[in-house]
Image (tube, rainbow, N blue to C red; front, side, top):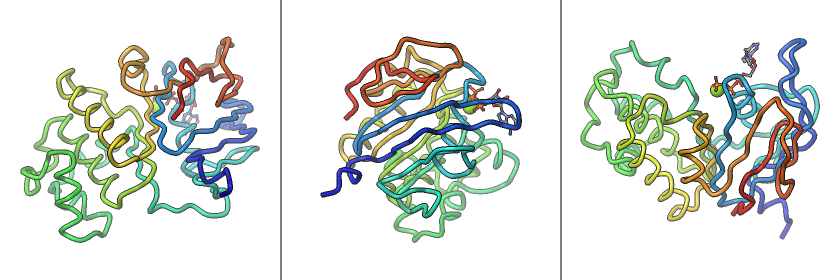
Length: 231
Ligand SMILES: Nc1ncnc2c1ncn2[C@@H]1O[C@H](COP(=O)(O)OP(=O)(O)OP(=O)(O)O)[C@@H](O)[C@H]1O
Ligand SMILES: [Mg+2]
């Protein structure tokens, strides 16, 4: 079997700038299928930008990203990828839309909607208005939407901002379950190194400063890996 098929994400020589502002320089990274990886870094270090490059929402100045062995510049298999953006909640917070309707945006069957909501323990809110749920409950609905097509890779940008510690724990338990039981590869962005270093299997630190770093699976000017158990 081609070794590439064991990689969920492979980034090679990636460079990106917004105009003159260089954000990412020579990012090289391999994330194996089944990994649970956290990306940390201070505000503005380029975490969301890196996720958008991985998802093909932004185009690199140089370099390539492959997901499950496919160069995303040629083809993106969206049915394999679930994404919850940092601003997922803001886009829908004023619209009188129900939880069920949020999930149905993905054009899936009623049964798939129920299964996705059940997996995040939110089936009982199906007919409620999204805006009437708490921040943590809304996050779970967005995760259900990202899960409804049964992705093999789930990418989450700051999913626990504004969520209390108890709900955060429930949420991280859910992610661990998805990773272990459903073998979903998880890539999670957070600015809270302390919390996620206890939850994920591997942490990638992304920063503009020079760090000493372990180059086992990731080598970047601005990234270092604090824990190399990447599987
Ligand atoms: N659309 C844009 N146009 C120009 N510059 C941008 C744009 N989006 C982000 N930037 C800049 O790129 C840098 C990285 O932004 P990014 O959103 O990736 O950071 P982040 O690590 O996700 O930060 P945060 O923790 O605040 O979410 C910042 O300096 C930011 O100002
Ligand atoms: Mg961000």
